[in-house]
Length: 177
Image 1 (spheres, helix red, strand yellow):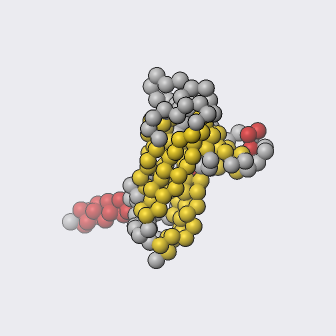
Image 2 (cartoon, one colour):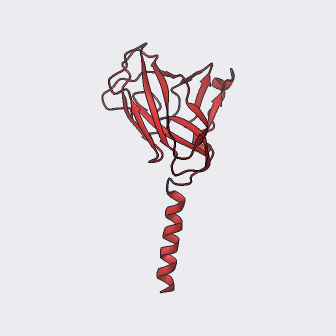
Image 3 (tube, one colour):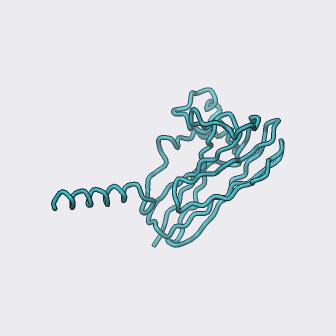
């Protein structure tokens, strides 16, 4: 009987640690970002998912090794208006959204195949049709703050036909009661 209760208790604790609720981790580890430094492009990334930000535009250099581009799509390059956003203070229960603008800076059409949020509290919407060279598309992240208190950091991975995908978009918020 004690063994069964112990297993149940550990399962509940384990589920609580990996569930989306009450998550208030700061962006770290695979969410590293080099910001506004002319030397940033000369330094090797601290990990394979770093995004270099230079004068308001992020280049498509974040990566997870071995992640393929969408099948049969030639590669292209992109610039982001930003890769991180802070909602600031919002009331618990507020549903907020932010639009990240993405520009195709390459010579081939940009195809966003998937935007995968790290949590069920975040819902993506994105430009589904190919984005032609020189044109812009949008990735919108909708966030439901109902299950959170205090500072939270969330992310979504963008899979597209760029050399190193996924591209990590992040946002933070301070949830007030």
